[in-house]
Image (cartoon, rainbow, N blue to C red; front, side, top):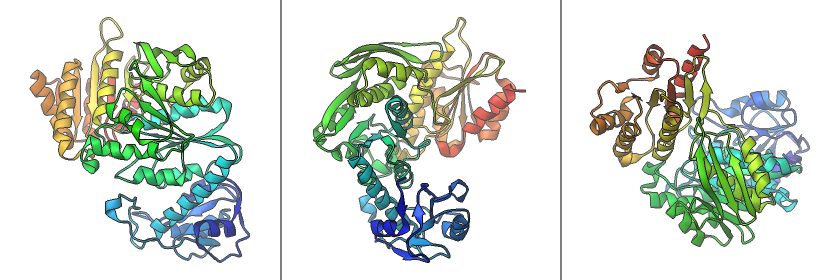
Length: 490
């Protein structure tokens, strides 16, 4: 973060000073967790469902924080954020869970103003802000973009999927005068959310990956999802760049919604940054020839899954727009590793069991891609290895939930997955779909919870098996993958 005094921060956010003359200097970033504060940092006093950050303000300053950004007066040098009007739910504005008195919303609003001020100053000095959105693949693509850009300039990107009204400005405030690239992931739970995030840290390059059925319960239709995802390209300046997936018609149509330059990516012949001659290796890592207006190069990815081709093309397009050559892009993509946890982590146990931990999140599109990767890995040897799909519920699908879960169960049969383990009654339609598609017997089993799945797998997984674990993050299926890996280490 750039260096600012508390007085400067108060002026930027429109707040008032409390317990200080404003002279303390913030020079070590912003944190809402006292355990991560550095001397000279700014502590965010946020209320939550179980604890209120205001209660830790004095302790934060005692630990070295220069001050506190708070929603009400605290016994510490602080900037008190101005109150904000209640959000109109029809505008889709973010709200902070557990916030009953408005102080959390005030702190978040002030944090956004601070991030905008800092981003504007740094952009004027040469910082490039890159934004990524889509129904699936945002985090993996953000990680690829950051790794492809980092050899040519200091790059800041959020850890994991820190992509909402808190994570977005928090990440932006990690940038300083030495930062060349700020790569941000933008999520939405309703209309207007992505526009709000763009207002916090305006991007010059914006990439839209796909429009799927994630969060369909909130948006109502894929067209509703597209309207919100397209808020990213609408926010781009005339000298900006919109990177759009030519293989997705709803994304392709967003070209009409931006005044920025449009670069199309994908396997479609109209794409300027295109993949041809795609081949998957024995662990479903794609290789392809990268075709660009500036030449071509052969790419071999170190990340897993055929869906990573589109993610890599997006990263390539961003890097090419910022001056990289096709060969530089290919080399950097080839060395890029999975960074964010529980996303297509492929680990081999000593006994030959392969665990594919993709348990961070799940929607119909990402589960289909993961199942195809499972099929590729299991059939890469002769004879084929036995495959297990351990799947939990896909959340936030609304009225489409039963149909979507049924479709996944049927796909598992069509891909000839050997064993399907469905966890939880919310995913029962997967189990039923598998039976209806293939008249399965013991090939598919419905278990009540994670503990039951772990017990089953410990008893029945054999050396050489391939096990995919995937569900929406709230169900905690990463515990299944970790239990399997722990069992293999004994």
